[in-house]
Length: 111
Length: 113
Image 1: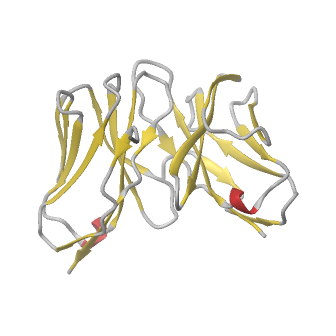
Image 2: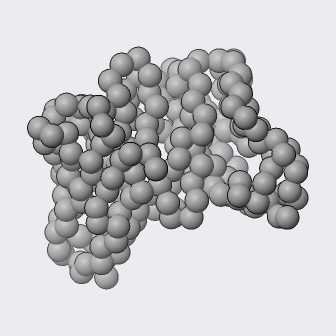
């Protein structure tokens, strides 16, 4: 079993839809959870950062962490064509340690 | 713009050759991480440096090495290159402290022919 599992998609939605992206993980020691957005062959861009469990909201983006289920989610409200990208979840056990990434979900938002 | 810079953007080289990839972290960041991204493996951690010292190793081949200099920039050296080394190589940096937000550079695309 991989440490971090992420459905690769692709996921296609119409503009304005609510998008739900998810990752599951197996290592209960993970404490730091991140979502990155990556446009084709560009550097990953940090979108959301959460420490331990709970929710975090930033504009149209909401990140949720459920450590009891080893499950994290990213919600995108009012999705836009510019949100079309690959979304990567990442996590780590300690501060200042390497990230373990999911393989990414490719999202396409059509206008 | 994350503030992390990487050069060169693209490298095309032949099997058996050696290349050097360069990374400058964000101002004030002491940690530099190198990651490799290939189509089949996704983003994989290679090696981490903190303030000039090697801190952690991941799936880094013995043919690969890295270092971090006193001005905190880092170089990743890839030698005896094979076709399978073709990938995107990213560096990321983070501040020291209790958090773990890592900011990625634009990457170097390496093609081995």
